[in-house]
Structure formats: structure tokens, C-alpha cells
Image (cartoon, rainbow, N blue to C red; front, side, top):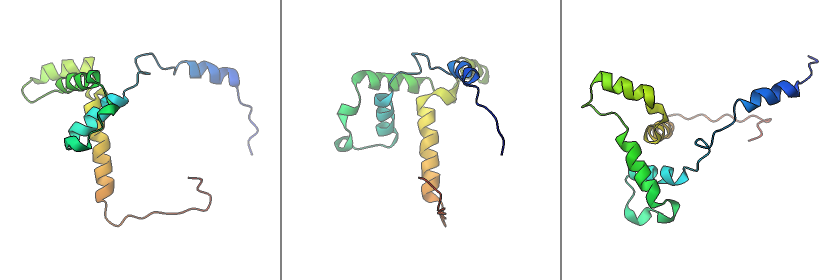
Length: 120
């Protein structure tokens, strides 16, 4: 067994470099709700309008307009990607999550292994 001591000072210094800025800490639950409802074509009767605000709807619309389309040149798309990568767009992030969930749901012959020491 290794006998190493934990350096708390080094840990604290490295941890401070990972602090979130105010922009990263903003609550985006409302924006995520709007995107989820629109993406999945929820009927109006299933939409919980208390989960988002009008500002969230406007924000979702603005984010949708930032997604590159086929009518822009490759140079324009590259410039836009350099300023705001598509991977940071909430619509793109939602697409990735939805695709993973769909793929997991469609997987045939699912195998779930149980281990005695699994704490979950």
C-alpha cells in the first residue's frame, strides 16, 4: 500500500483555477425547459408554463438563431464557430442528450450487471 500524504495547499490552489464565473453560474432551467418542450413537440396541454419565463422563450429563440444553417459559407461558419462553438449552444447540447437517450432506449439485448459492492 502506498503511503502518500495529501497536499491540501496544492489542492486548494488548483481548485481555485476551476471556479465558475457568474456567467457560468446562471440558472438555465427555464431555457432548458423551453428547448425540451419545443424539441419534443409537446402538445400545449402538457407544457408547464410555470417552469419558464418569457425571457427564457426569447433566449431560446436567440440561441436557435445562432445555429449555423446550410445557406452560410464555410468561411462564415468557421468564423462563427471560433467565436461561439456549436458545442456550447443549448440546442446542440439538448440534441446530444436526446440522441444518447434515444440510442439507449433502442438498444437491443440490454444487459445490466449487478455487483455486490455497487453503492448505487
